[in-house]
Amino acid sequence: MPNYIIFDLEFMVVRKQQHLADIIEIGAVKMTEHEGAPVITDKFHSYVKPSRQYKLTPETTPFTGITQEQVNQAPSYPEMLETFLEWIGQDPYYLCAWGPDDKYQLIQHCRYHHLPLDWLQNYNDIQLAFTRLHHSDHRQRFGLKRALEHLQLPFDGEPHHAADDAWNTAKIFASIFSKIKLVTNNAAEEKLYVSEVVYSTGHNENHPFSRLAEMLGMAQ
Image (tube, rainbow, N blue to C red; front, side):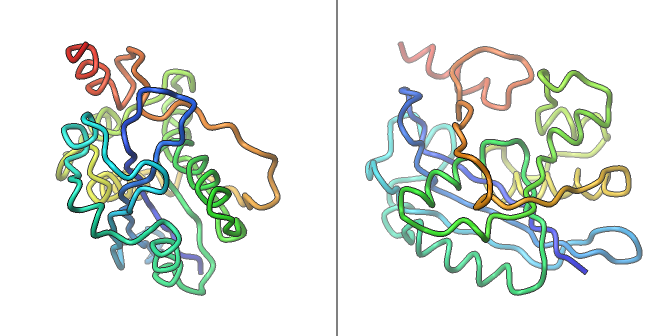
């Protein structure tokens, strides 16, 4: 029986979209099926030392709560990934996250560090699955908080904290598990991806990063 790895990444906030947004935090929960429903069996959390831009941008800490001291003391991306894969273990697994960007960023970071991609398998976009399940236009996706409200579930913790966002995504995953069909895939066999904008400064009421757009607008 496979495990379900529900994870979330936080990134350095960058203004120029063509720059790689360094991963600076990862949170994950491991779930396994019990009596037909997924239950949480373990947790994982790590800050990550930026790969390219070592000093956090001024917008990053107000948005994510992550400090320069935390990333200075954190493992590098390759070190974090090694620990993360040890935590995932040898059993078959699905990787699940809220949206497509986390997958694209993992691909970019692995390519930047010349790391294999075969571990990045069976990725499922829970945001897209939830949006389709609730008959909403996939171009107007549910934000994490709105999806929880739709299910009448509370948001635990703080937004844009990787461990908290992973936990809340896991709650949604458990709620819709019996209604969705998970797909199998492997990033090592897929064509080169071009990431969608991470932490866009565009305005969209359903966009999970709309608060950042407001913050950047006030700073100008």
